[in-house]
Image (cartoon, rainbow, N blue to C red; front, side):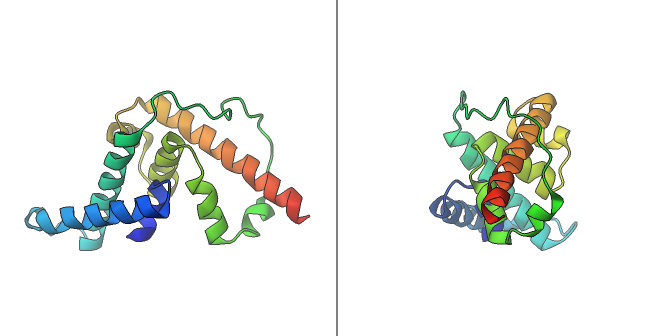
Amino acid sequence: MYAVCLRYARTREDAADILQEGFVKVFTKLDQFQFQGSFEGWIRRVMVNTALRAYQKQRYDYEQTGYERLPDMPVDPDAVSLLSEAELMGLVRRLPDGYRSVFNLVAIEGYSHAEAAEMLGIQESTSRSQLTKARRYLEEEVSKIQKITT
């Protein structure tokens, strides 16, 4: 579950705080588990919701990163395969909060844009836009790493 929290948090310390808060919620709301689906899935959902609440508490409404106007550049598919899991997760952790939350929910957790938008309290079109921007950012960073290694 720490890995789930780490994907949503800015730092390892924030992830540890989210994990702790999530397990407190799991233990205090254990009676709400209805034995529909897996217990692990229920815990994961609690952790994701806890991470999203933490994000909403510290969200910057007008966060701008300069990646809004990145040109679309093709990325060699082999570049991603050359990166370790730790390097890829490091790139995901560096995403701005909004981008990271949408990327985690849609690309990693498998939620639809409508579900992600509802969970984050944003419009579905904003979810789509933020996922596109997150992908552009990651493509740019992977391209930089690829140029360094070649």
